[in-house]
Figure: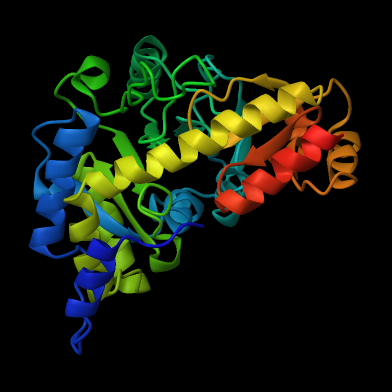
Length: 339
């Protein structure tokens, strides 16, 4: 990972004298910062402070949302078919049944579906949802009285069509809460964000939830009793991170440069890159079982994640991360070039 921005570290240090318990709901300053950021960066105007809630990173929220919503045996949680495994694990922790959803499809008509997860840009595939599909999902969820939750942690990392010039024409993926998708009605809708990638705050565990104020209030009540509280200094650091777009763009440029050289080296080495329109990964295949590709790359000193980790549908792909330092990326490119 790259260094945490100075503006964030300074804010953390200034708030280090924090002897009292922080509020689970977050400070008023942080809640306002989230609302302002959602309007400025995600195109979601009009959020009120009771519609947002800080979380201890985003992974804990993904894992515990079914439980926080009161789901249990007899309930179904729908999640992306090829996905980060925590959506599946979260359903199982609550005793609910996880079911995979193919990209671009609507869930089956099942009265047991209580929660539907989407992830755009997606980990690991990098797919980005369009307005039409998101709007159809909103309609389906409301018709079936299900909560629709969007993991939008990679929203600041969208790429243009040319891997050699990845920033050209790039635009941020649309949010589930965008008026083009949901109108001015966030009923039954939630989005989760993380500052880990866009601001290099993985060690801070800094994330937030936004959406339907009624759902946020219900979730807050449980979190208060469960001790799911973001530390006060981290809340101050989040305010600084959300208020500074410059460091986010600088980090985006770093990722874009790594993406361009890795893409070219992988293609030259005989791999095919699929999807990968957003996020921090390249979704690649050699047209063989993922473990064979993992071994082929490992023999050349390049470590990647097997697509099978993200479900059976990924069994012929590997996930290549852009998060290594520049010198490690350069070393990987050199090893691929020699192959």
